[in-house]
Image (tube, rainbow, N blue to C red; front, side, top):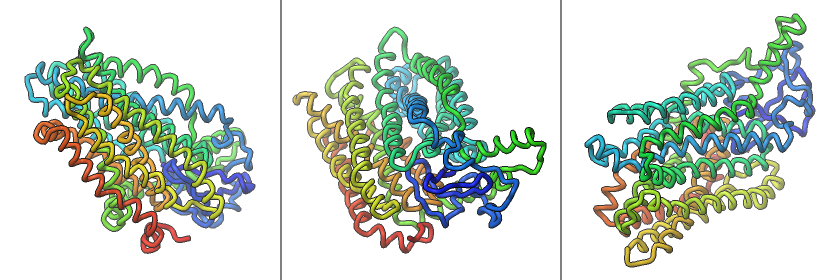
Length: 519
């Protein structure tokens, strides 16, 4: 998924292909000696004679107008915001059905536990989808997987909206999860295509808000729709209408941003214009094979998960906070709907606004620390220091259990609802910052193996995200809101040492890893 990096500090001849490594759209490493960076052009290493190949088509110097990093800032922000809007509706769809659990359980005469699968199966689809979309983005660029997956996601809202049986809903929700995650798998790399390292962190932080805004808004909007004359089926119709509208806009706004594919198209055009059939781009000669793809996205992720303590610990931590986020889509309606007696689904979902505020504050924290401390360390060392990603994560790791205990022990109906809603702020901040900075750290640590590391992380965390809602209601009914939230608080409290230990000892652990590059 990582793009070809354009190094503005060097002058790149038209027919020489210098690459530096950008990993998964979140961070950049300027490592001129590393040419095999596991992207579409990395199936094999750059040939030694690449710089002298007279038929190799490359960028026309540092100011090549077709290079995505030479787009105007206005165009970059339009692309970024458009991609973010697309993603909002994907993640919105994952949670909007949660408010229809009770009414659909009655309509189809099944238990609420069965209907929770309507939410969980979408997230399970998020776990499997990247195994398809990430390789396709390396073979064919960003646009084809982005819009093909998004279109099928929108289409599969229709059978959900008109379903007359439970099986149709569950199967189609799973399928739309697989196809709908194409933006989640592609957009990170696309943002890396167009932004420089520091500005990219800002763009990614804003994009991360959209990935969490969608699932938080889903229950709020879905609750009001379900309790209105429209009924639960309109949760799918609204998703179809909105995703189609913004998808059409995006189709005309978002260009191809993947460097190797842009150069491949340029080579094809020049072959026609010059009648020189020997002109070619790097990707023409070095497309990833099926063996490369299977190794990168299936075999190596599991190997790294077993052998790499940093990846294992961070994956478990990120999977936990991701699971807690989706668990709350069942726990919040229970706490405010059943315990506090807020009978209207939409009103009972309004407390999610507290989490949304926390998400926005978390993104602001990431932007601030990136623009200040992280940027200073980058300038001082001349390279990314992975452990600097952990500073805001340490703060967030403390705030998350505080928020969980706060939420649980202010849940009594004899206590005002205000403090319980406010508890969502540290929860939202904690979840976002832990999630994003944990991913950033993984990417910085493994660099050219980041795609494999992220594949392992995505599979585990999405599986947890889908599984947690399945036991959420039983857990909160059995233990009560206070103690159920406290259990989560104690578990997250036990995770606090992870970023602290890696901040102090991460460099030593990286030195022993065979997947982390040595500086």
